[in-house]
Length: 420
Image 1 (cartoon, rainbow, N blue to C red):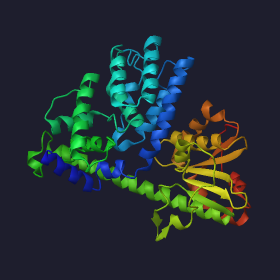
Image 2: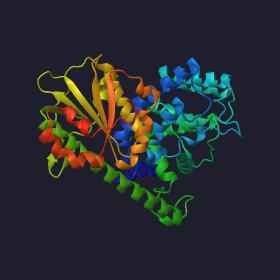
Image 3: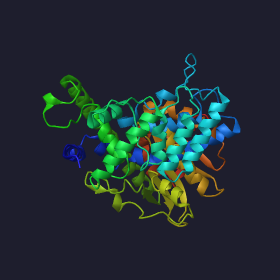
Image 4: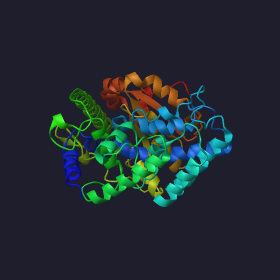
């Protein structure tokens, strides 16, 4: 094994502000994205087959998939740009060219069911043979979320990191280059085992951090590969600021989880907290001691059950043991993915009417209203989806407990965005 790469990997894993620790390990946004992206890709395929995909990126199901990816701004902030429709350049040519659109849909459908790297590579080469103008390896970011142990994501920063670590001069403009880089990345990841996960997001995060100048092959800053000292320092300051903002958002999210847990218990419900959050503590108190160990049996398919277990807060009747309402607390992440988890839950519970809530920062009110107006969310007949602003929940939480008999007291605060 390359001892320099091993040493670099160990530094990468121990740095609290590395992509490994801020995005790959125990990151709610990353883990929650896998199912929403898979479901979004299914929607793309269905819309292309049904002739409803549209002739622009905006408003298409592809936009929703990229929204779930770009919400992970630590790594994928610009991932949607290659898919924007540029009419003057006619790229990417999958919006107005029906043949190309069908080829893209067939590619995604085949990748959804592919069970091996060889099958995925074959589908990539088949798509590449169509020579669709402007449609290139940016699609690999979608493939990563479908097959995280088989296909690594790639962007400009990862490319820079790859070229630096592997002493190469690859360009990310062709599928051929991507597949060559993939081979090197997979081989290096195998050699690094068990230092890194088999999930290729871990080593791709390392490439990203090297690509932005955060890590180098040696500790001597003056010999830092191809990066100037000023650029490195700027990258590190930016990363530090992003990490501090993420910590602030996580604390706000946790505080509101505690608040909704306490309100639910005061109103007479048992409370289920997302499985990936329940071990967290605030001011010496742990959610673990306030939450149900598991949800009542719902007869859900395994992948749906996993998604439902990540919903931030669910209130359960102590008498009937049935779900009464649920909450998703949004931060700077995609509101769409939180709504999708709530809709998954509603679709799995039968025909009874349910009331679910998004709890959102005041500054995102316009965004949540726009999402609530999407036809896909208005068409569900068995769920009333409303939103509550952070400020109003905090201001009136004690009154809810004092004057309310059940979850319907929340209707005093909740809004439907004018979609009812």
